[in-house]
Length: 359
Ligand code: DOR
Ligand code: ZN
Image (tube, rainbow, N blue to C red; front, side, top):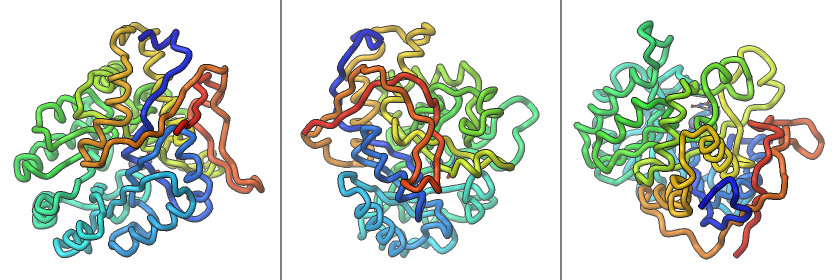
């Protein structure tokens, strides 16, 4: 397949295993956008205000999401916090909650209630309960604070904790979310099959120099060097089922993005699948990937199948997404009907595939 020359692609619906759907008006704005990005299954982040720390909150949140868009499967998570005990884990597993997200305190948006200090020690009974009940642990894998002075990143500084966690709980399914460095990919590869890594669309096209200065491109973890980005592109198109798509689409009102401090988060949900395809095309143009690297099978694996296998979900149903070249461009923003709330999209104006659903 020569992606640049392909006029029409038909794929199973994408599974987006890391989304921020927010609450209130912002939720009402972004949830109807999920299917426009070709996605039928999402793993929903719990960093609301207040964070989702109880099963009842997670179920109530899911029913709100379902009523806004019933055509999406919502996998719910809890926010790791001292109130999430082994008993809560058992209750969560019985209620069909898929996992628990760990945020080191102060590392990103709404992480004030996250874990502080040695979480391996503090939460070992919770991790043991998660391993027993087969819940997934999702890691925001960065240490909080300023980057080390030796030029390594906050993500690299976190990797020894991933390895130790995996040694202590080898059967606990762990996802290192939004991998942003070649070192993170290597760390995931060096662990057993219970450890996977999610890769966003925006880390496949952004680098730190851009992300630091463009508010709509600013996120955590900060995108890194061109060689880190290229390592992510190679992992995404490698067919290695340890790596799957999780957009980390993180909407913030445009009004806050133009203020100070700039909140971290890149919004891509409305064109999630299209932006991954665009990043792969650009990688082919730069010679980072060859035409032969990007096959139908690899796209299906990265965008849809690998994640469903890891999360023990059923195969996608008969619905398909069809992507065609019609000169469509990414809009500047999505906004409410009355214009009172607007969220800027990443890569406004870029030409992408048009996407429609067929059943
Ligand atoms: O850029 C980010 N935005 N990274 C995160 O980890 C959180 C997210 C958000 O919630 O806005
Ligand atoms: Zn996130």
